[in-house]
Amino acid sequence: MTQPLSSPIHMNWKKLMLCLCLITGMSVFGQAKKLMRQADRADNVDTKIELYSQALELEPENLDALFYRALAKTEQGDISGAIVDYSKIILIKPDPDTYFNRGNLRYSLKEFEGAKEDYQKAYELDPGFVDALFSLACVKFDLGDYQEAIKDYTKVIELNSYYPKVYTLRASAYEALEDYKKAIEDYTVAVFVFGTPEAYMNRGQLFLGINYYKEAYIDFNKAISLDKNNPFGYFYRGTAALMLGGFDDAAGDFQKALSFDPNDFDALLGLSLAYLRLGNTNLAKLNFEKAKEVLGISTDDPEAYASTFWYQNQYYFFVNKLRELQGL
Image 1 (cartoon, one colour):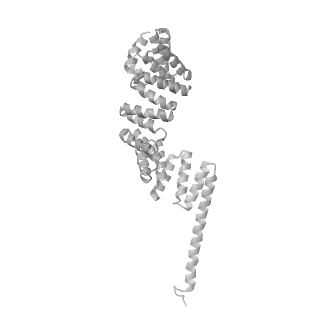
Image 2 (cartoon, one colour):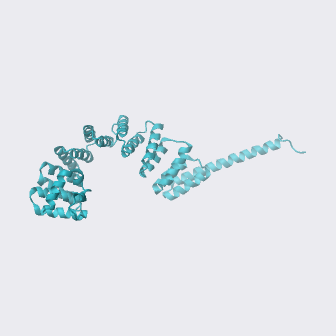
């Protein structure tokens, strides 16, 4: 006689199948965890990726395996592959760290709009995520949205007033908007808070750009006193000295800059200008010809110097003196 479906024999078989499924599932889960542990201990990045991939074959929605494989792919240089892994996590269970990491990778590829969206989502999910807010401000700056960048930099300061570089970057945004007063205020805060050569250099360059040559000279002088292996400090201090009429000092600084890089065409041009103002036409011509050689210039057209600091930042002064140099 056929046993009814509700018979003890049939019920025991169903329980047996359920137990087998549970045991199989636990076995797969345990194997995936073992592969994850092996991947964590592996020294070779390719091995890590292979082990994480094996764990994902057993558990396709293992978010930890996806996250750490993305990190390993980033280390390997497979940026697109890492973005795919982070995107899979976001589809399953979005979180601030994953959005932030994907934003960083998109930023590295100069996909600024995509990076902006990711940083925004990371910050929305965690309003205390200062790194995400800071990165959001930076990508807005890169997109030319200076007003919005300033707003975000200000929020960063409110959350963490000692956040590295935030005052300098907000100052750069103010400078881009030609709000020089606020830019100087932020650069000055950076000088007082950090007191680094970079802080003095940044403020000095702004002073130089708005023709505050005395203030610029003081800042570059301070930057050099903190770091004597600073070729840009010598070049910019020489430029400020030249514009202030300190031609001997300018010549000395340009020579010092050239000791770091003999082919620095801006320093060669600066030295030729300093010697021109000192009346030493032989040295002025010698350094001018060297600068032309480095630049590959064989014409008298001022446009040939468009890539130089002097053309871009001291145009009228430079073009006027260029005629004198060309006449030597």
